[in-house]
Length: 231
Ligand code: AR6
Image (cartoon, rainbow, N blue to C red; front, side):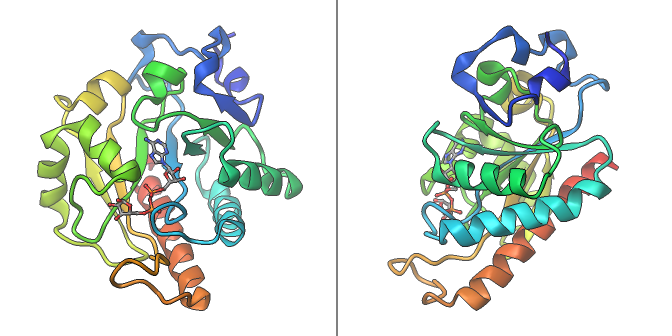
């Protein structure tokens, strides 16, 4: 119990289960023996209304492409509820492709509380952001900016003021930031995905040729950003 292999033995974990198997002792938080792990939400599939079947194909394709480059590091797709359709689709498609479930798995929980509530230590988390890289707006962006406090906005501004769809920006968190000292998150990677929501300005007007290309670029940029942190 307590080893990282136990932690990853089942490909969908539930933060609410809080079993001892998942727990990493607080003393290990931030120490070098923790496996580098990127937790990421499904980019564009809620507020931006991207098709779930297409998004799940792209997530699995990109995870498969990047895993060999990542060494011991892991990728974890996170969503809030046990009934998450994107988690089920990705889990099934990854299993079909025989992707190593110790290196790429799904996890149910709030991405801002993965260590404290789920016992899963992720040193890097991704944010599905907006083009202005601004707090609020709902979804995971609002949750991450709220949990990180003003430190994240300040640290983000040093790196970028805006983002184009398909791009990501890596933001190191100061040790004073609550996400850093309570959850062990050293970096947030903001990602801007394609917007398919017809009620939003700058949506792609249902053009999935462009949408899929941009979502692929977004995951490439995210995983390259994570590589730059772990290397
Ligand atoms: N922890 C884990 N996953 C979450 C959390 C959380 N706290 N909150 C939401 N999700 P969305 P998008 C999941 O809408 O579609 C924002 O307002 C959610 O269930 O956050 O890329 C931005 O400012 C879904 O699976 O991002 C942009 O304007 C995934 O995170 C816009 O929404 C992404 O949902 C971006 O829309």
